[in-house]
Length: 257
Image (cartoon, rainbow, N blue to C red; front, top):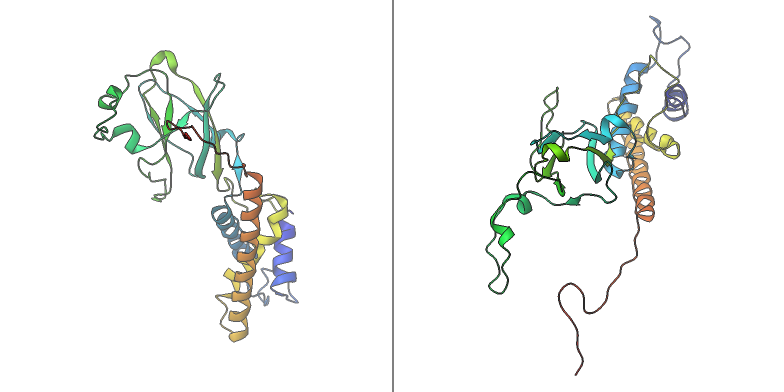
């Protein structure tokens, strides 16, 4: 659906907000302006992305391409990125291992029956072998602390600088606007109608006419939550991997005498 189609459905089909005068007219009796409803649709799309983690991307360059810099191990990601699914250096055949702050920096007393000298020192700069995203949160231009940080281990040396290709879960990058009613939301089309329930909830919760509007707002909220649950189940089915298990793995064995 285009933004124009969604705006029409939200106003007329869901909110039943009609007027005998065109919007912008002095005598217009619309309850919500187009600008307000588009703002609610944008908020609904972002919330749906956060609640369902449904917008997965490996091709949009500004969000999924990061160029290494020699001796630099921390990189601020695009503000739309919610999480990283995998990182692969261009030219490599396997993804980088995922680790975190405790594995990179925290010394742990080795077990009395096991000692690994590598635990006592960090790797010198060279080829990157792992990444983490739990170092800290960064501010964006508006002061939001929701911008992710990517940390590499070890620091890349000049002869191992590569382009990193990320698979990410993200929010929409571009906001919908009245300037382009033919624009299409970035989430899959199957969920375009779903997010209108949250937009309707946002609209009706501010209307102070009678108790009926508050009840309708709550009904649209519950309908939206049902759509979220359905989308989450769909995502689980797409990423399902059968569990494997067996004896004699991971450093131990099972023996019957």
